[in-house]
Length: 537
Image (cartoon, rainbow, N blue to C red; front, side, top):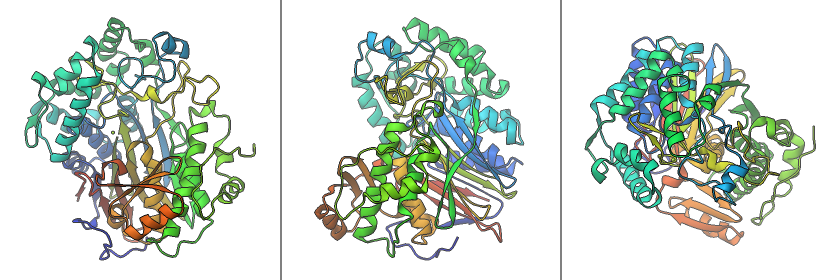
């Protein structure tokens, strides 16, 4: 990986971090240090990833929790493995059931209805079983300690916590939401910057998960509590749904982008969108980053890939077109020809048949992990199982109620997923993990980070610091205020409807770890838009 560690063309107070024995990069310092502690105790990158992920459910509950889904790309012994840790819709949840509950056009964002089976606890256990070195009781110990003893809130965490509370106070009406307020806003007050916050119920659940290797969550004591709570409040999730869940090992998908292989998890994740966009973009030359031509083509390619993704991505078995068709060179050329000098209104093509946390870890043995987990929208559905600290995700909101849509809701089906880990290789060697969390920003962030790295030779910190853009719909594009004004003006003249945003939050939060194949030295970049932190050894 060729880049200059002394060149930082964008505003940043951070430098590239280097290490040799181990590295953990994520959005919360306490979680990163917990992962590093596990490495120092003899754990590997997989153990460190699990420890960091578990800690994040405690110290960054505004984005994820025990009731989350997750995905992982794991590099071990020269091979990349993919784990799909997303859960399915309950067997009792159908389009008819949702419509009978009064929702005709889409599933609600909050409450019992959008809750799908949480996949994260089972995925932790499976990662530990297959690749970990330490017992899960050791790996989850740091998270349990923070849940029991508490931790002080950072400014970023306090901001999102308060914002969530204000929104949930208006949206969550009903007895089923009482436990959310008791857990995250006791006595009607959210914790403030520097204030200690603990969650004994969270510690209780994490300890049971650790002691039973996840079985208590899906078959035992916790499963019983979830089942009883959902039955009491008319929810659809049952113990049988939890017991039916299994994390799924999958073959990662990739495209060749200018000599590098860019890897993503296959559908139901939206990583396919990033790969399709890169497949379109590799047909162009980009002599400089800060040019209108570069941004224009990136945005247009992303539009075309995104509308395809929104039409076709769902549970892999339910897709009407294949991944291979969408990532074929022939289809990329067909889509590439639609990119001209003016902004277009994208429509899905027809190929020829043929709130989230992200973390990256690496150890001195060469193992590397790209890991992401999420409750989908902030704290999720607003449903917390009393006494457990489990904030249930609202991932089911993504299902379509149109029975003809590929992503139509069906019992036992997995929905379109926004969370995606990324990984880069070259010549059968690992370059390393990367990711940018943030809902539908994620594939857009992946494309920008990959191009910043490969096309423009930016070091990992500069690749993350660079101003970002985000296409939302039609010709609407949001850009960070650091984007040069003359480029914003020229993009507007091309027909893009540009909105300059002062807040960097919507543009995602990224982490990168690259490994030098000759020396084994690790180089990491972390997100300057949040409490990003790299723990290194």
